[in-house]
Length: 170
Ligand SMILES: *[C@@H]1O[C@H](CO)[C@@H](O)[C@H](O)[C@H]1NC(C)=O
Image (tube, rainbow, N blue to C red):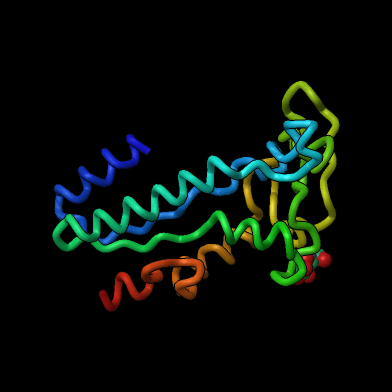
């Protein structure tokens, strides 16, 4: 968060005024982390990410008040991912939680291609049916949906403006 603040402050100083942000993915809910805690039974641990994302939204609101000309768009990647994990078919996916390639439960071990120590891995037939490509990264199809939401989504997922409005009308 600190590094990120230093970075965009530099850009603001150089004259940048319109910024696009993406909040944190549900870090306790990726195929990789989903089953880390046995007592967790494959459910997500999201308290910390939720807090961090709330802090980000509040910070951006404060900056908009305090910095002359600062305008932003904040894409809710967190809930966009959760929605697709919980209701994959609504978004055209067959599988929202497991990775398309890897090993183990939810294919959570990122050994796709078998180039590391563990040679054997599973690969699904069609990655476009999956939201997660590997243990931590969405598939191209999911990323395309996110890109479209960032550009022209409703205020429910990208606020206070989507990028199209931010760049063309604000
Ligand atoms: C893979 O899945 C996508 C999404 O369901 C579908 O549009 C596409 O036709 C499939 N490709 C193949 C080769 O079956």
